[in-house]
Image 1 (cartoon, rainbow, N blue to C red):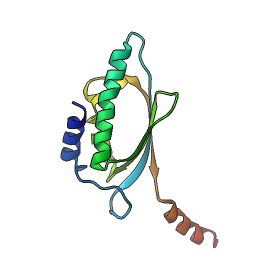
Image 2: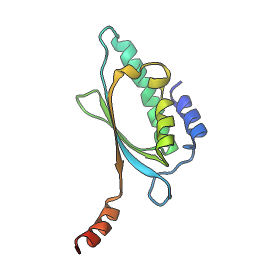
Image 3: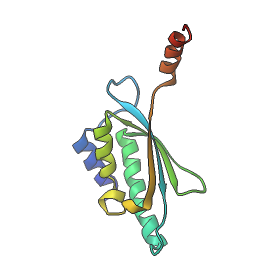
Image 4: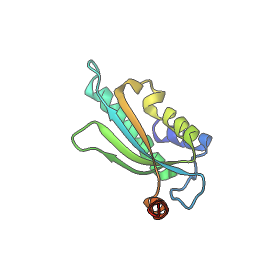
Length: 133
């Protein structure tokens, strides 16, 4: 599965060829924070094997343009990414198409947080109006 699965999700959900950047109307940046935990009774081989498949898919999403940046938090089972999706529907479809969900391991993801982001330059322009009272 892995990268091939994400390629399929990307193609079927409209992410194929999506480019990062605010110059494209209709795209929205989201900060993703996902925390994982190895359940008791699950071997390291199984836990890290699933994570390895997820990493392959995530790197495929970077190539497809759906993920702008992705990081593993040092010292924690946590991943942070900046993702670019046209809307919440595509975001949901992409997430549900990832190996960790497709293979039935969603229980290892203990917390997912999505934060919509906007370019700071746009906020700075709004501040000029707001500061005028």
